[in-house]
Image (tube, rainbow, N blue to C red; front, side, top):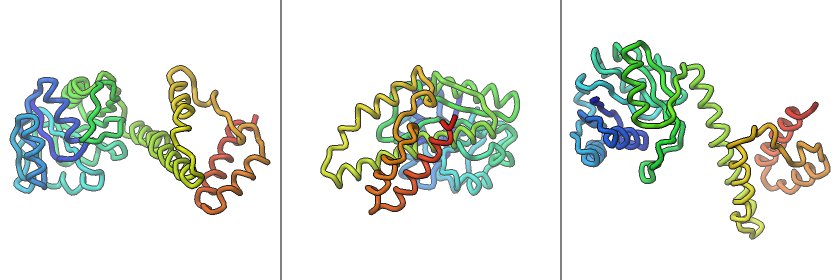
Length: 255
């Protein structure tokens, strides 16, 4: 199959290199930054184009791999009758590209992708959506070429999954950053927490996180909770996070 890419960022690199490795043929890499587009095109043996000159309707699928807020702007310059147009945003409705092509959809990798450290495994979940049967055929084949884990979901489901990704990845990473800073303030190595963090992750392979909750909030140990809140006195925003999560835990396990 033939594909084209609009964008030169992390997701564009992931998609382009994966599809090229799977034997797909790239008809072009389109970008506002011509040098960045050429760099990616050279990486997979394709041709780069200045996005401002338009995008050719010459591929089976065109992957719009730009930031969420740029999707609406870019699609105004696109007009595809043959090429299936997909965006790659987890939290954007499929209708965002509806007016730019006859056949549309979404391909969203449920992963935090960095182009300088692209994952080697194919076990990166891909959630996809298609507007019609032709788009479904092309998009499902593309998703399966990228990943061993492919799941069809409508926009409502995908947007909800994006919310869970924010909570389980972005929010937990922020909590790790808070813990790291507390360790630094108390001259403790953050590495001491690595085993317990890894233990929590490993348990997810076979156990529901709802059954593995521990800690003072689960036990309703209000004395410990108050003492720890006092310890966070210099960081009132962290106190609010601690208190909000503790209340949520107590509510979940109140019976």
